[in-house]
Image (cartoon, rainbow, N blue to C red; front, side, top):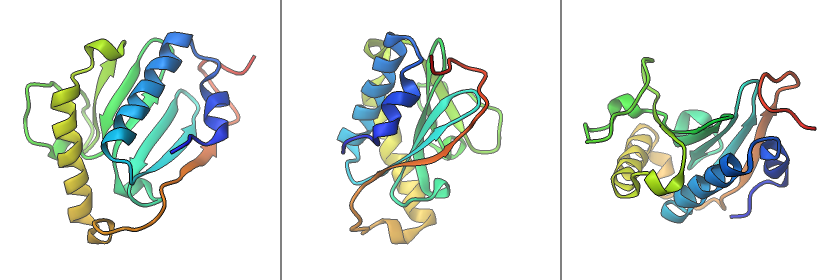
Length: 153
């Protein structure tokens, strides 16, 4: 799936290495789960991209958030995932993440298993997602006017 044309402009203010990392993580997710929507927020403090088999954030199984010095790779219901050797961070009720600084050190094999478990959790909560025939889309959900992160030049 091609990214929404606005995604490139949203990530452009970031360092080229962070842009590259975010796009590598995006491709990793879409290669693994090609029949998913990409929901994009150009937020106050980060560019956030969630992956969902519907057009709703509540159905998202994972996400990436682009910050100035790292990218978070997260699971929207990470607190419900089986325990693994990967230590997920987060103190909230559901969301958990790991911070990534380069794709080479990203634990791809373990994360693949976690993504499939997360997809299963999402489908269990909304069985309509299991046999969804919709064409995947890359959708901008919102754009914040004020930002405390790299801003357009």
